[in-house]
Structures are given as C-alpha cells and as structure tokens.
Amino acid sequence: MNKKLSDRLNSFPKDYQLNQETELKIESILQEEIKKMEKQAKSKGLKDFLKKLTIPVSGITAMAIVTLLLLSSQNIDIFQKGLNGSSSNAETEVGSVEDKQKIKELSTVWANALKTRDGKPRYEMMSEKAKEKFVQEQIIRSGENWNYNIGESSPWVVDYEIEIDGMNAVITYKTQTSIPSFYHTKETLTFKRENKKFVVDDYQTIFENKPIEENELLVDGDEKVTEHMHQIISDYIIAKHQMSDYQQTDIQFEVHKIYGTMEVNDTITVYLWSYYNSFNKITGSETVTGVSLPMAIKLMKMSKDYEVVDFMVPNDGSEYVSSLKSVFPEKYVDIAIQNAGNIEDLKSEMKSKIEEWLEQPEQETDKTITWSSKNNEVNLIPVKDTNDEYQGVTVEVNNVKKEFSWSFPKLEESKPRVFFTDVTGDGDEEAIIILNKGKGTGLSTDELHVLNSKDLSEIKVQNFEGILAEHVETNVTKSGEGLTIKVKVQGKESKFDYDFDPAPDLNQDKLAFGGVVLYTLENKRIKLYVPGSIGVSPTYVADFNIIYKFDSAKNEFTVNQIEFVPIDK
Image 1: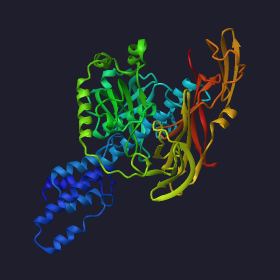
Image 2: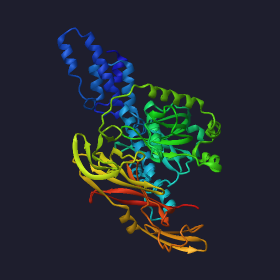
Image 3: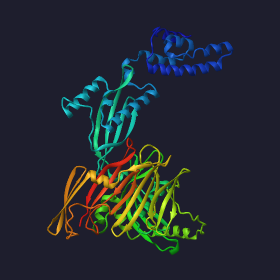
Image 4: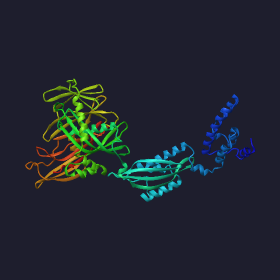
C-alpha cells in the first residue's frame, strides 16, 4: 500500500459510527467492490472469503471496511466526508429513496389535514419550533381556548399536488366554492430529522385562494369522454325522457355533441347538446316524441364505473338565455345558442340509427310478457292476464323465484319499471319494482316494492300517508279571490299566497294528497313526488319531494328529507 493511502487510512478513528447517509453510500460501494474483486479472484478460497464480507455496514468500523476492500482514493473521499460531516447535515439532508418517500407520505398527511380541516395530524408531525408557531396562529384564530380546526368552510380543498425537493415539499391545493369558483393555494414545508424521524420544522403559505380562470379547467371536445361514458350519458338521458313520455314506444335513441368537459377531483362535468327521438316499428322513421336541447351532465368516478350525479338544463322561453349562462361556461354559451337551429350532424347520426334498426329482420318473440331490469338481473312476469289488468306476478332474481299478489292495470303508456341496484347501502343490490296503479286527468299513482335479492323478502317502505301525517301540517284559508296557504314541513314553517281560488264553493282547510304519487330512483336513492292540491278536480298548488333513507335497525325505508316548493300561479 502506498504511503499516501496509508496516511489517509490511519487518519480515520478506529471505532467511529457512520451516519445514515454515509452508511448507504458505503453499502453500495461495498457491493460494487466485491463484484470487481470476485472477477479478479484466482482461487475459490478468496471468493469464499469475499462472500463473507456482505455483512451490515453499521457493524463495521470505517477502518475495517477500508482495509479489507483496499478501496480506491475516490471511495475513501466518500468515507472521509461521512466521518467529517457535521450532525446538522444529517438532520437537513435526504439520504435515500426511502427518505424521500417518507417525506412524500408526511406531506400527504399534511395536505389531507387541510382537506378535512383537522390540524391535529399536522401538529403531531411538527418540531417544537413549528408547534409554537402553530399554537400562536390558532390563538389568533380562536382565542386562548384554541382548537385544532384549520382552513375555511369555503373555499374547500378538492384536490392537491405535492412536489418534493430534498428536505422541502411544495403543496399546491385546488379549492372551490359552491358557486362554483375555483382557486389555487400554495404552501411550502421544510423538514428536518429530530430524534431519528422526520418532522416539519417550518411551513409557509406562498399564496392563498388565487382565482383559477374557468378556461384553465375546461377541455374542449370529448377528449376526456370514453365510449363507455358516452353510453352512460345516452342511457341516462333516454331514461330521463322515458319518465316524462306519455306514450310507450318501441325504441328510443339519443345522440349528442360534446362542447367540452370540466374535471374536478373525482367528478367530470360534460357540456353537450342532446338530440332525443322515440319511434314505433309500425310507423317507421316517423318520430313519436323528440327533444333537442343543451345540457350539462355531471359524472362521478365510482369504485368500478361512472355514475350520473347531476343533470342540468336551461329553462324554456324568455329565461332560456339567462338560465343557459348558469348551466354552461361562458365560452360555450354562444356556441349552444347557435346550435339551437343547426344540428344537421346530429339529425344525420339519428337517421342512421333509425335506418339500421328498421332494416333488422323481425325476430321470433316469446309470447310471455316479461319486464326486466337493464341487464336482465330482475324479471317480472304476470301470473294472470285479464282484459284490463294483470293479477299476480312472479319475480325472478338470479334464478330465485317468488310469487306476489300484486295487481296493476294494463296500461301501454305506464309499464312496470324494474331496477337492480343497491339502495340500502349494504353493498348488495336489491330488486326495485315500481307499478303504476292508474292514470287519468291530473291523476297518477305508483306503488313501490323493494325486495332482498337473495331471498326475495320484501323490505318495508314507509307510505306517503304516514310520512305526511307525521312530518307535514297544512292550513288553507280564503283570502279575497285567492288563498293563503301555510305549510309546516319537518318543523319548518312557511306561507305563500295562491292568486285564485280553484274551488270557491268548497270549504277546504287543508291540502289534499294522493292524486299524484310518483316514485323515482336517482343515484341509488328512492324519491317520492306527492303534490298537494285544492278541489275535487285537483289543482296542484304545492310540490312535496320526499327522499328516503334506509334504517338498518328497522329494516325499513323511512323519510330522510322533505323538500317543499310552492307552485306559482
């Protein structure tokens, strides 16, 4: 060994323990040097000896490692730096990929704390210096009896991005209000090691609630919309129109053009123009019902799929343009107005769908009448078919069958609606069946059945009479030529005037219910529409929308919320 190398080796302390950063570098060099020396080894004995050297670095003194491996001067520099480096460097430098990952994890906890507005997880990862700063901020915020509540109720955090640079992290939050308006807030974190673990030693807000221009969030066209999402949108629009169509038709088609999308967190809002038509085989390409209008549909990313969570359309008539501005971003409003009379491309696409359908050969059909859920998980088959009604039904779910005594009229325009989805929130789908019991002028009443899909036992649904008796009070008094109507819903009182008296000869002191009872299923929730009326030939003056919740203890659907809206005259 030359004198220069010998002098440098002798300069190392005999039992000096290396810091973490240096240990990692030494371990890497150790493995490389062993591989090199194995290639050069001439005897099996030397190879066996070298293999025994793959022991933990922390158990070897710097002198022993250097002497055994005959390291080059370049590698000795690394050891010398590790031995001579101050402890403060170890506290403020990242030593490995694992260290960087740990800082990323802590930064994520820090960011989530603002999202949940709970500052305690932040406090628990702070150095003593940072804790003092946090406490002072909270005292200024809430007084001496401070708590861990941080952030504001609006705007709230919807998403964030984290960038790691050594012992520093930069977190950029995306926030929004209910209007909605969108903002950015940026925060920096400085980490250090304290008692062998990483802590936040300082934090600073670079800027707060900087407005994000709407155009920054928009992506023009359908770049963000997959074919599957296109189908979800069409299916939803068709189902929505079918609920209001007065005539049952053989087939319905929907086509649309997408102006753009806005994606925030797990939701994507799609701005589009929709063109819907329904047809009967016997009348060919003659449209039975048709609707053409702009709309915004909000999809949420669920665990396995997307689900429509909101549906917005502008008002008709003189309010069309102003309401369109509340539905669409400004950059798409003018385009939508221009498209009101210019949808030739959509008409052409619709025509192709109709022609393809009409050209299909007639299929031999089973004479057995069956109503099914979308993917045929639930089948409803009438037991007895009389001239004017169906008496009794058989329900089949996953090859399990059960007969029920339900009956309903044979109305072509109001066939049973059958669904298969989880409305109890237990993770298992239920069979939901909505039967229309009768229709007339100003009259339409539904009957709802929810079945456990495993044994087809029926789950109780609180009827509207019980809900209204328990949660709704009404009072009607004559006031000049009109009426004054007082309503108390779930303890909340309101009053409104109705401009004329639809039944001047009738002394009715309460609203009447039961003329219209309509059940719907939206976003896996059961809803009931039951308006209140005046007069024998009912004039509906107030809408009541009931949203159900599932009470697992009672195994029953009960009222969750009642929305009351006066009907303007």
